[in-house]
Amino acid sequence: MTHALIVIDVQNDFCPGGALAVTDGDAIVDGINALMGRVDAVVLTQDWHPAGHSSFASSHADKAPFEVTQMPYGAQVLWPDHCVQGSNGAAFHPRLDQTSADMIIRKGYNPAIDSYSAFFENDHKTPTGLEGYLRTRGITKLTMVGLALDFCVNFSAVDAAKLGFDVEVRLDLCRAIDLDGSLSAAREAMTTAGVTLR
Image: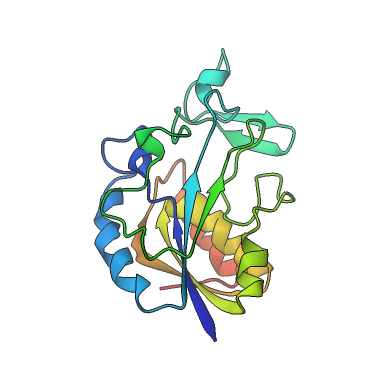
């Protein structure tokens, strides 16, 4: 079985001091680096938003960060401006081993639609290209780690399971935002989809 490590959004803006910091987000970096040598492929995902992205609360005059609004593709949490293309906040955490990455998937670059999952934008239809890459490499097993467990890791793991991959999430190498019960909902969604939580 060919095994890939999918490292989700370990970027400065999601780590302490960042614009959308996840508590202890940087505490997982060394453990992730240690896993890289034990798999056949490493893929890093990178949130990569243009300035003024539609998922930013600042793009909506009457909205505040963490409010939910309706987009053409469904409900969307409005975030503080984060991971703006080319900014230090969008850069990978400086301790993350980028040299071991076989591929970097950038997501969220369409200004009209957010992208949590490593596989699809939030319309659940527009692919990122990751599935095709994994299939051509013959990869069937995925281990997912990164930030944040209840959003981008969750959506990526559920999509991967639906696509037929054997998926595990290493809870010790993820951290969560836990926005209004999002963590328990994410754990339930992943378990229901057949994802192994370790």
